Figure (cartoon, rainbow, N blue to C red):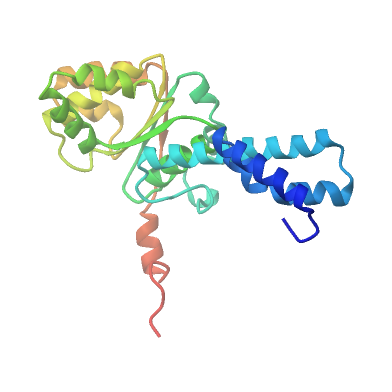
Length: 260
């Protein structure tokens, strides 16, 4: 607080600050001195000052929760809609906007983005994940290899089922690049368990080089059949087309900073 504050003012501020620490009102504590000065200068009603302080606390907590969820999601590259160019995607603009609304997540529907490498599948998938967190959703990101590692880790103490029940509680789970590399038996099991845990309860979004009808090329046919049956029952399948946008950028000299 500035020198305009009286010793009595400072004593009250110090006491309120102490109470804020005790009550874990971090953002009220940070804003307190400035709000008190502004309230005095502008002759705010005490209720208005209280409203501003509580609004700062709520906003700060929301932001902190959002960033914690973003960290726990383990996104790989930080790609958001801020760098997404709608006109470069082969997906119809109306479909892009419908996906971005996330209404399908509220209906526990799935999303499969299938198409060639470099056509924006992973970027769109991660951007949807970041957008979901901004909208207050719990989101998790996995590669197919991550799911295999999860199965192996929990098989040791026979807690595989429990681990995937917990994953199934996420409102939106993203799995990237299915079909890019050979799928191990553990990874196939992990993908099936995740799809089964989320079925008609939560939303999954997958990107793949293959349409799900071709997943039997990647794993045991019995597992593939059961997995695809559950995955596609309530799913939007979006197909990307065209040449690699990464290659296009490279050929146009946009992939690097020019040497000087």
